[in-house]
Image (tube, rainbow, N blue to C red; front, side, top):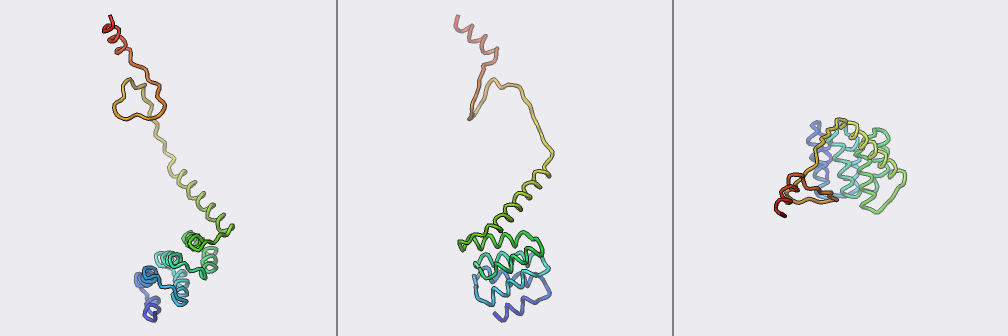
Length: 156
């Protein structure tokens, strides 16, 4: 653990990210590792802080919930809220306020997706007389006039 602590202060973000990854993969859940991950959640590098939040959720660090909530309120980075929800889910906790926040974020993101896809393509086609392949659903099939005439000739 002392080596991980030392490397967590490294100036290169990828080294700090590797420290977080090692803790997450190993499932190392000690008081020191949880404190280290909480500290790395405040890292200015997005990849490090988001991975640290994810690692806390992976090791079910209940003691990190209040810290993650404070970080979320200060930064409004949604991955903190995601980590909180994951910890609560894995540990069987429920918090109505956090649930409402998550629902609100989900609604906002779906609204943004709908607004970004404002281009609509519409294709209108004439009735189909013959269909080849598997057809499902309610079908109102009407034979084309040309087939009706052929059948009349065969029937005579």
